[in-house]
Image (cartoon, rainbow, N blue to C red; front, side, top):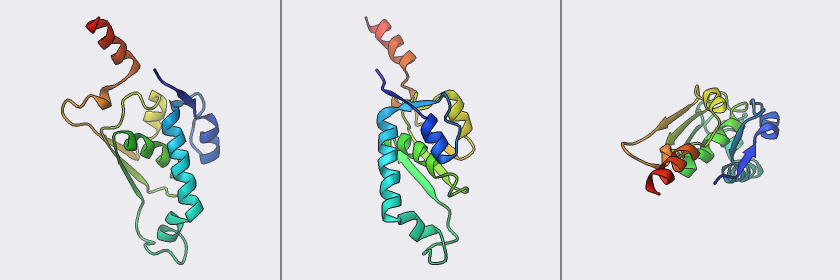
Length: 136
């Protein structure tokens, strides 16, 4: 069902506790690609950091919906040490995205919003197995 990716190395590289933590491999891959692209083009540095920053007094906000919200959480973990005032707003993030420990660790800078009966944020292996068993 899932392709979990260990976050040990990512945590060591970006300064968060990734030991024994996992996330969906595709989400990690997309977050890595996005981070690399932002660094390669120096987009955030030009906007927010240094003497020549266009918006030096601004704080970084990362916002995403559904799968983009999941990628936003991982990207936020990767950028948090460089941008300590960073906030991440997630609209209907996929359920079961992070381990419980990692979700608690990032709860001080990540807010998730779930609308009414949206199924995506409630997805988890346990819920999908329960649904399968009820349908069959």
